[in-house]
Length: 287
Ligand SMILES: NC(=O)c1ccc[n+]([C@@H]2O[C@H](COP(=O)([O-])OP(=O)(O)OC[C@H]3O[C@@H](n4cnc5c(N)ncnc54)[C@H](OP(=O)(O)O)[C@@H]3O)[C@@H](O)[C@H]2O)c1
Image 1 (tube, rainbow, N blue to C red):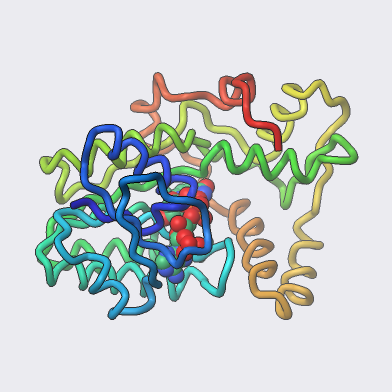
Image 2 (image 1 turned 90 degrees about the horizontal axis):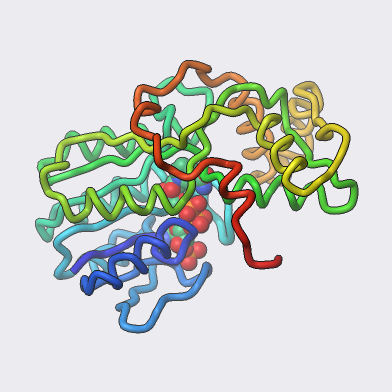
């Protein structure tokens, strides 16, 4: 049995689908707030912040995949309680039944990253590496499809997407389909235990560059609109205090500007993965 925590999310649902296509027994664990589960998949509803819920979820598991995140989305969650503590709970629960863990983390995960989620994911990674169980960490770049959708949403009326911050740091946007391929591969290949696998797309492009590609793909003219760093600081200190999700997103935009601009070591392995332009040219469901 392969348990996918977050198996209803963007990445998790793709992983579940692929595993089912290969006839693996799959169980989805989520709070039941996001997405749907395909037929033939076992479901346990619960929260990674609850040890009791996790105990039910991991019964009989050989591998537990964590594709949860508390950065955004429905319900009350945040990177500290979900991405750090929830994952550490999941590691403990998996350890009790002798299951391996495949943890989906983020590129730039580090204890001193300017990006909160990268610090919390790093703490979860370390908890997993220090545990006695079999582990693989998959560090993924930002999902191209998600960010293209966000830029399109902000452009709706003006046809000029909103870029938060300077948007110049190259981020190696990767297709969620390519991340799912890697997650399924390492789940089934036990020789990847004890390894951290980076998954990035084929091109380093800032958020502003991505916004310009979106505009070209739609035939929109002009330049993206900008929310300058000073306004992000102000927003984080005012509305961001009252609405934690907004504060988190504004701080994340500032942190993205401060991330390292170096090419990731894994960039050489990205050849053949879907490029931003390919994704923009591919037919997509209307929405
Ligand atoms: N999005 C990106 O650009 C990106 C980039 C790099 C890495 N990642 C990582 O990739 C993974 C998947 O991301 P995604 O964008 O596909 O996520 P997503 O679509 O937002 O889905 C998140 C999943 O986690 C579940 N979840 C959230 N909080 C939970 C909780 N407290 N207890 C149990 N389940 C919970 C959600 O289901 P319910 O709402 O039903 O609980 C959902 O199935 C995450 O680990 C994320 O950090 C994402």
